[in-house]
Length: 114
Length: 111
Image (cartoon, rainbow over all chains, first blue to last red; front, top):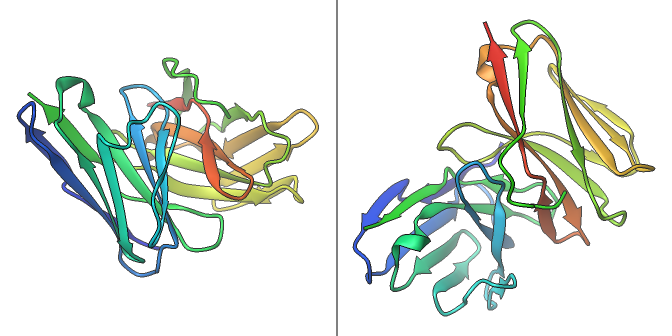
């Protein structure tokens, strides 16, 4: 199946700093990328949907100024957590889709803010 | 499915037995459904999908059943193995755009 690479897999940052997470589709062009957040023992919660070259659509309750999403090319989307705080510590997962319905997921990024 | 943020229900099965994981979805307009498997600390992996014009689809050791009347989806795993231990999520596609994930079920395979 298609491969989506997410980097880094783990990151620890100090409170107040910003962290960038990359999501790349390695063998296909992703017309749409999704960013999810997952708390322990809970399901995936969609944060935002981004289409290449246009602004991301954020879900209700997700601060767009805090979670900056850039989808500059058909193979790369980035999520930047700005001014991170301990409550932002979570597992962040991206997924990518090319036209069809099936989405392929990245490996996830474990963010710990200390 | 709706993410209600609850602790995951757990299904424990004996190795070699069949597993049945159930999922309810809420939107009758959903026309595509996927089951994902998520191992600890990893992203979800695609298992099997089904479109709304079908009621059954089989893969290798897995079968998905769709009952649109009651908006219910199930995943059957034959001859469950230790490597099947994971959290399983169903997802339905809303208006061909966003995935809506169910709360997930943790499958534990007992030796």
